[in-house]
Image 1 (cartoon, one colour):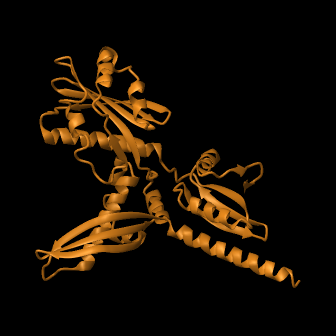
Image 2 (cartoon, one colour; image 1 turned 45 degrees about the horizontal axis):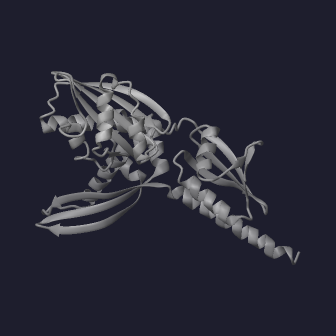
Image 3 (cartoon, helix red, strand yellow; image 1 turned 120 degrees about the vertical axis):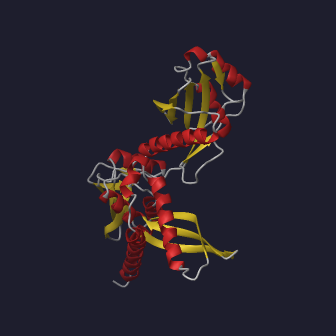
Length: 353
């Protein structure tokens, strides 16, 4: 017993520390929205708390624009301040200044992920994983009245696409450089441009994702054929817009913004979290490998598809985790494989190798 006592104390301390760590980390999962700027004139009825509340609303709206497809935003349009504040975990006043009798506030707000997901679930909204990604974007304008093709010069979509970009967009657009070889390749395939695959151009940029948008312009209508490639998956989408004057900056910018929302929604749809699927997974981890269990918990904590995890039991040999995953077993295994975790899944309780 004398020799076993230190070992027992070691495992007891290890188990308690891991249990505490697991709970605190699960509660710490948060969405952080930064650089929320609010300002108000300094009047007799100035109320700083009211201004901070406005910051909470602004931060929540910014978060929803990242999480939710545009068709669902109307469902949360009238969210109450108390509901928003119940989801706020912490907030930070990063900067406050008084300039010309105006109070300027810069706020950072942290929202509890579990509470946000529960709120969206109550509204029957599937959130999307917040995945920011670079897309190669190739806009091609075909003027059907003159049979002209514009790729770079005098192409209003090429010139204006990245002039205005909201900081709550998930997609960053990379425009191609003006390349004579690429231009000649596109012109060569002009008559069959809808069926051309653009692979020779796309592969130059070493990006997994791309959108080639072909704009067919006539007097009263602009038809847009979008060839969207996300890694190995390819889809074609078509849209139509009427009464658009491309020489009018406001109309052009509205069209660009409308298309960006469409592409954002498509990207969010590709990364939806189906919160109606609540798959319980039991995982066994070697308790003597503290670094492995620590890395494992940190990884679980950063995967939005995991709605929660905890230590269900432990002994001197193993720690047993129970987690809830919003997806299929295959999806979980693939995600964890990307993080360099592998499992023996032959039994009900999986073993982390």
